[in-house]
Length: 126
Length: 219
Image (cartoon, rainbow over all chains, first blue to last red; front, side, top):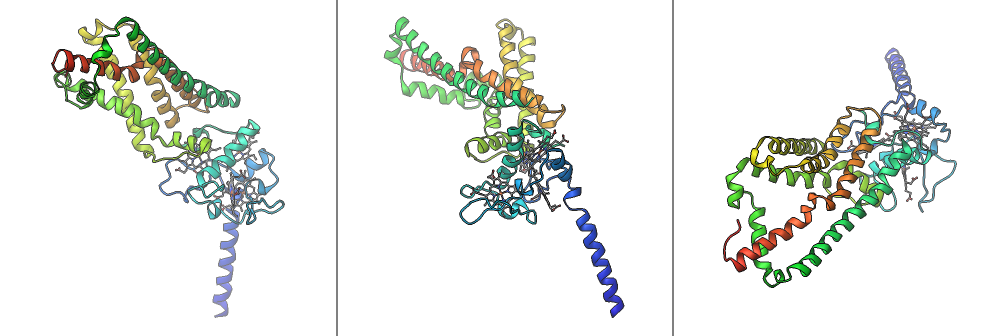
């Protein structure tokens, strides 16, 4: 019984280690599974390489948190959640729908900084 | 690339739409003034009833003798005009951008279907070009401006098709696509593509004259 528990725990911890290893460091695409019947190939986004290249240290630049009144919470972040956990497919008041949230976030910054892809095909690469 | 993209997607797009609408209005007003000065008697027999009757007949596939004598051309003409209008208005890519610019959204065609419709529009343009250059009776009334407006119409579809399929790298095909669409819109009122608006008036006039004066059909 104890032996089974031991092996069980070992396998579980290896599994957890493998999963974390495939966290944001290995992310190459933004998953489009939250959309029903996605029309485009998923957008390319090498999470860590991108943020290093773009000089983004603040996780909350993208993984933001808001309070009840829609006020952005400075110094807090939401990287434990998916964008789709908060952003529905359609706009809700001033909270953009999922597609618009991604586009305004990604493209919005690229336009503002005049760096990075802005045409559809540059992100949704086949 | 960024500055050019922003310019073509922003100010130039606005300019194109303004010239498009302003140009059509100008053509309309000029036509009405011309009629008033030269042939004011036309207004004495312009009729909603006969005008609309003629338009409805010509809008019906195979609804006129002319449509029936050239079945292939008829089908191509109807499909071409229908897809020419529907594809860009219900294209997901365009709706995505309207949504982001003004918060406007509506139903979108699935990309796969829009892709096929776009290819059909391009194929229709090729058909028209081949017909112009091979059929003697059409060739006789064709000059270079006919091919030019055909190219002007096909260009946004061609560049859009290539950009969507990503046969080229980077953003420049998308830029070219927007530019060719803007060029088409801006030149439309000042070329024979103006039939988009004036064609209805010509038809209404013909219908009125045939219906009210000659008491004959014009279809």
